[in-house]
Image 1 (cartoon, rainbow, N blue to C red):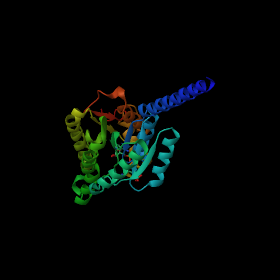
Image 2: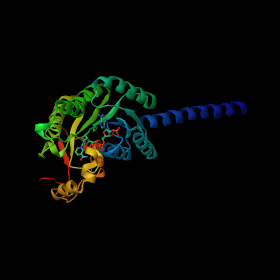
Image 3: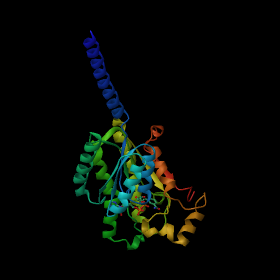
Length: 282
Ligand SMILES: NC(=O)c1ccc[n+]([C@@H]2O[C@H](COP(=O)([O-])OP(=O)(O)OC[C@H]3O[C@@H](n4cnc5c(N)ncnc54)[C@H](OP(=O)(O)O)[C@@H]3O)[C@@H](O)[C@H]2O)c1
């Protein structure tokens, strides 16, 4: 009798343990964080986006072009916020490298999350091109269009099979696609092309419940263009004077907006251009 009781207790404990294990496994599965891929996440706006995404409980895979050290710092900061993060090298203008890049990212996701997919693609990486229309060379043009348009087009296309249904794509444009400052004819028109592309993405990917939007920052104090908006007082004052809120933008003005667009509250915003500029050139 005693042995039968002990047997019963042991058996019920085993069932209990198995149940607890199953419940905790279910919890881990159901509370799995969503994942964002942010290009150019090592510095400036991309860094701020990555950190704000992490603050919303989203894991981040970010890319850098040459600055691994800065990328590693962003990864550490995201990890300290309790989210998973990793950094991979990507030249956003080198379409031929994208298959291999995605192979690395998806292998990493499979290892850490158990599947290859992610939820949000933030096409942010970019470099400045300031050159008067009459002096812009074919080489400058090709370099810029590869990074700012062709790269975005094909990275998004190649990433599509790995973006979960219900995911979002956010492309980064610029105020310079709405108004014209001399010296930005190539850059501004390429950002304009990104805005048109985004509407097509929203239209064609709606069937998979994937949304696509543009965030268009005004001039922001980053390293962009040699840090001219931040470090050149004349430019800084000029932009501040043209801005309704009376100052130049900071990275922190942008990252939270991108993170918001990746939340459930933003689910009905689709195919839109959201300018985040403090009201410049109104
Ligand atoms: N700052 C502004 O005033 C402003 C205004 C409107 C729009 N934007 C747009 O916002 C985006 C980010 O600009 P930002 O101000 O954050 O610039 P940033 O501070 O200069 O940072 C640029 C980021 O992009 C990466 N990157 C540069 N060239 C790349 C390439 N060929 N392939 C892949 N990654 C590359 C950099 O990586 P490394 O660290 O490895 O170099 C870095 O992470 C750009 O698309 C830009 O056009 C900026």
